[in-house]
Length: 426
Image: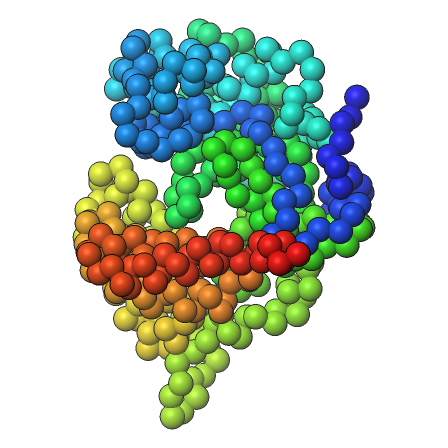
């Protein structure tokens, strides 16, 4: 029997299918609902920094006595995670350095284990069951199908000893469901911590003019209003980064979610001019030159992602990444203004590389160029803006430039809490 969430109801959204709408007013900053994860997994890169069970970051985490790989706050968290960790514990010991399932395979293994243990719908399925989430398996192209087949092979190799696996068709569907509906759990700087599925949250449709944002408290997701909402208004989140112009946003939506957004922003493209600002010159830059530079920027972004993957696999040195950022910024800077989103994208990448190379001054140099344009180009209450202030504030504090650092951290607090202002003044 389907449950309910106070103040919300499931409905058929015109042109979108299933959706979620409010049945009472919600003010900016108000919590619509909170949802525990149906299943979650901590990224391997974060092991030792966060508790595997509650995702608390702390010093002195206790190590699993058997595999020596997983870390916990203490006995309570370790016991709480054992039903899931046992899927990996002995396998990690047996395979050693050859244990290498993808994060998606690890999450799917936990979903299957949860399904087997579960006797009734859980707290994350109050209005949508895990089986009901959209898969789009029929829309998956050959490249994605090959990746899924690789993940399925990893699932069989690393988890079949402790897990009864369904047939291949059902696995294809489940992996597609996770691909379309998985959520990245992020820290306060929007760095990837892990992946989870939240069936009730997955019911929320996309808009480039969202009415809510999703944040995380441990492994739970919190859905909070960023607009005043009236009864009957649909609850809408953004599935993608909203910094980019309309065509880029919809290309990404089609690639990963198999639809084109029809929101007012996508219809009018009202923000595209500011996002694609060109450098002022005595003679106006020809449209063909601008179009060619847009194509160059998109191509460079794709190539950077490939080179970044190579760097993460220790194939390419980070210095090559920074050089690529600097060269592309020089090239694009001849046509694009510094506030152009493609310039901002490569500056953000350069900032990340500087942080990786432990060059805080370089990271600050790029961050200072990013922060003000971000504030103008992102929608109100954007987490991307507050996280940038937080990163810069921490960098300045680390360099003992306390007055600047404190100012930026104060701005972070204001941005993160400004959505609560309406509530606090009542």
